[in-house]
Length: 312
Image (spheres, rainbow, N blue to C red):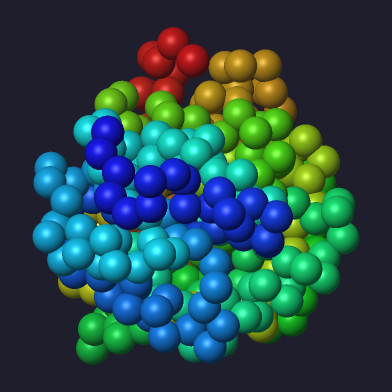
């Protein structure tokens, strides 16, 4: 593991402040550099940023930025997996909150200030905060937004039967450090880069465990970011197949590890998602949505089969 930037963890001298921003990336230097550009122009830039980079080599431009920015640290990890990267980050940090931002998610100009105000104002019972994430630069024509999270008004949510996606996504989320530690972080068997072939599901698995443990989450429209829609329409079916494979695998994980009712409920939510996409394709006369529906159904079946065979 190689560290570029401050000699100690970047949150060290900021341990008593509210949060550290974490970006996990692999082989996407243009994305992560653009997100760092957006962070550098924040109206209230004072929080440390930690990049966990699993690329084969650290991009020279990222090295240079870390060498000259006292708030930025880059850790080059030889391992693979988004869940692993997230776990490396929170274990390295000491700040009260850990804020995860995808490398292709661009915070708006007052994002940092709004987030600091929000986190300072929530009660100690709130352990998870998410903001409004819009889809930006959508390709023309038939398309589906990827990982947008629209928030129109503040909402507090809790309860094990709350649908896990209703509290937010890993694209832009803040979680209390002690909550992450209590839950054991993200399941490294799930998520992009998983060595077991479960290329998604880590976010919803974490959210479900958070809600099942009694956690309280806040979604607020004042913290705003934009998720770049850089994938082509042709890339969406395989992406959504992976999403549903990860979802069904995490549902089967619950089923196989003692939460039978929860596992069945989660799996049925996945099936409901497929049915809704079929209905949406019919209403909109959308060929893309029809293809995505088939891909989702395939992902649901593949993830279920792998999950049933896997020794959780």
